[in-house]
Amino acid sequence: MLAIPNQSSVPKPYEQFRENGRMKDSAYRDRLVDVMEELYKFTWLTRDIREFLVDRYSERREATAKALVSAAQLQW
Image (cartoon, rainbow, N blue to C red):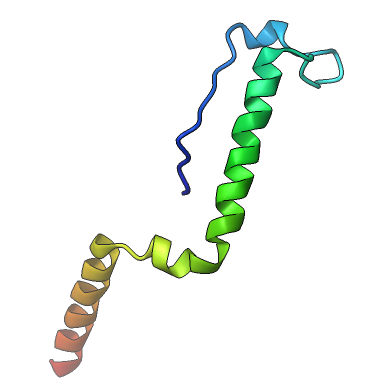
């Protein structure tokens, strides 16, 4: 998951939406749009380096351990 430094919250969200489900114009809506724009930009900027970003030591270690177990079972 991509994490961005920007965040926002909406107090009393039940008061911030119209009947049709769309958020009312307010500073809260503006802030949420800012957050979503930032998320879009970070996602767009990092899309070509996905493999680098999701490569994790713990998962590589687990895969190596499973491969060793499989190899040991084949030898029996």
